[in-house]
Image (cartoon, rainbow, N blue to C red; front, top):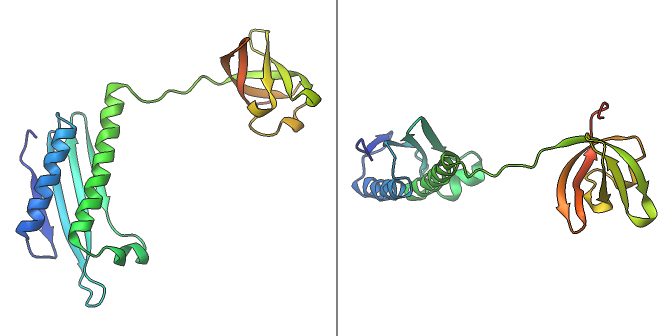
Length: 188
C-alpha cells in the first residue's frame, strides 16, 4: 500500500486485538491487488445489547488507481443482526466482501470480463413442430436452423413471420441459432 492503513473506532473502545486482525486482513488485500493505494477501515459499535451482544458495522474504503471501492458491512435483518454479534465476525464478513470487490475490479481492469454474443434481429421463416425445429431469416437474408430447446420463450407459440432475436453459433453442420426469443416488431 502506498499510504498507511487508517483504522478508526466509533462508539466503542479501541482494541489492539481487533486492530491486529484488521491489519492482518488488510495485508492480505494488499497481496491480492499489488497496486492498492490505500485503505481506511471504520468499526462502529451500534448498540450494547445485554442479552444478544453488541452489534457492529464495519466500513472499508479501498483506494485503487482510478476509483475507490467501498464496502459497508452492516447487519440488515434482525436474524442477521444477532446471529454474529462478535466484532471479529463483522470484520471477517466485511473483508470477505472487500476481497470479492477487489478481485472483480482487478478482473475488469485486465479486460477479462465475460462478453456476450451479439443479439441479432430476425424473422421466423418456418416452424416444424413435429420434428422440434424451425428456420429463421437473418438480416443478411440467409436461413438459420434452430431447435425447440433454443427457444427461450415457448417454441409452440412461434409462427412464420414472427419477429425474433437470436444469437448465432456454429453447430455440427454449420451456423445455427443457439438462442431464440421473441423480438421487436420490425426486424428485416
